[in-house]
Image (tube, rainbow, N blue to C red; front, side, top):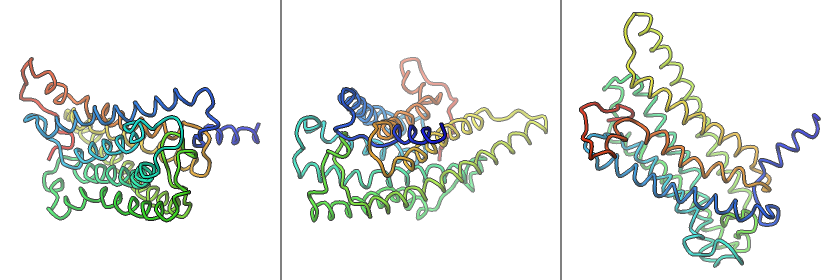
Length: 301
């Protein structure tokens, strides 16, 4: 049993190829496509609500998370938009374009999540001084994801043009990818380091907020419901990100199962569920019923 269990885990976590999915290939492909398409639609609605709704104020780092996941959904579905997601190998130029964008997508998402959690960690107690970022700090936090996208995407584009035979859909099935081990490992190292820092910040944030909540209860005061809501939402999102890190790390070297790619495609819907179910957002969508003066303070400026 001790010898077969790791092998079974490895089979589940390995990445999918065109040949080993067999009868599950098309259903898995459709699930991947529509999960990513839902990212584009639902997170566009959420981002527009954050930007346009007068009673729903959110910090730019949260809006940036929505934008990066929207881009991720678009990049992942490029073959579908071009109607080349099934059949023979896609057009080489399109394949190189998608592979280049996707090479920078994971670092971009990791960087955007880092900016979100970092801001939450410095403003968890509602102190307006701590929560205020300088213009330089805010600018760096907002452009960090796109710097990561540009760096790894450009590197992948250069390598793809030099080695076009290493770019295809055969090894990933759901999308075109560049098979260049050195770039893959550098990208994985960057992403792992960033998400490790995210995990540390999450643990520190949870500890500090729980300690603050216990102190308030001990003093016989009522805790702020909004702060409890913040804790639950941030913890939920952090746990999901941590699960993604583990699955990505275990599946880095093999490519036989759709689980890692499908799990990654569910992260965008998770962002929507976590941040779209806040009371003020739901009230903004029920505009015909009016809007009360109460609003959520989760990641507000």
